[in-house]
Every structure is written in C-alpha cells, then in structure tokens.
Length: 142
Image (cartoon, rainbow, N blue to C red; front, side, top):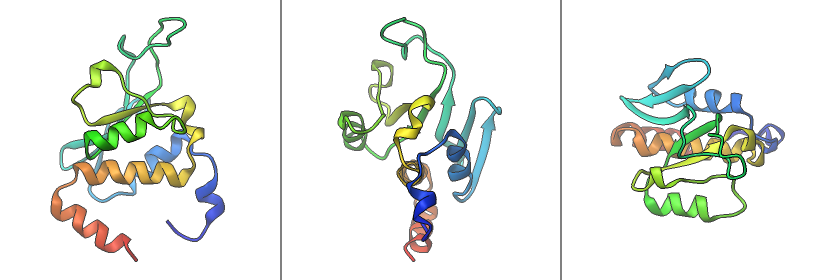
C-alpha cells in the first residue's frame, strides 16, 4: 500500500472507491457519475446501487439511496464481513446466494482507506480472470 501511513489510516471516503477501483488493471467504468459501476473483463466487482425496497431504513421503511455493493470471493468471506460487528457491511435476503456485501456510503468513514483498499482489491481479484489476478498478485507482492 505504500509508506504513507497517514493517507492509508485516514477514514475512507466515497471518492476513494472510484480511485481505488480504477487503479486496478483493466477496469471499465460504467453507470453514471451518481451510480458508477466498476468491472473487469465484463464482470462488475463494485457498484453503487439505486434505491430498492429490499434495503431500507428499519425505522422509516425508506429505501437506502446510498448502497455500495462489493463482490467477495466466497460465501464464507461474505459471512465473515457481515457478521463482524466492527465492520459496516451488511446484506439483505435479496442478496442470498450472491457473493457480495453491501455498505451504506454514509458509513464508509468507519473503514480506513487501507481497509477499503483491501475490500476493493479483493472484489477485483474475485472477478478478474485467473491470469490477470495472478499477474496482479505477483506485481503487488513487492
């Protein structure tokens, strides 16, 4: 991640999602400025989702307008993130069987930039072709 621990230890921001996602190889940005999606070789790994009734404020019933979805490698990874109360990640029944975790943009600051970087990189690795993932791992291990 580099030696600037101050930058990596600061609270993550929504702008960091775009910066980190587009720093990965072969990323294509889709969607729009409000709800972008980031894909590698046609497979989306992070995207900003529009309001849907399956993810709503439990007190008001209003659909969340700021959901970000991150692909994960496995169901075990998904459960580890959503069951860890120290993380802001969650899921809904709509996402059963889908390897992704959700995050409200308003809660992104509960993660450090380095934690967000790991989530984005893991999402990319989960969706990238095997050769591309192996090549990235080899060059980022330095």
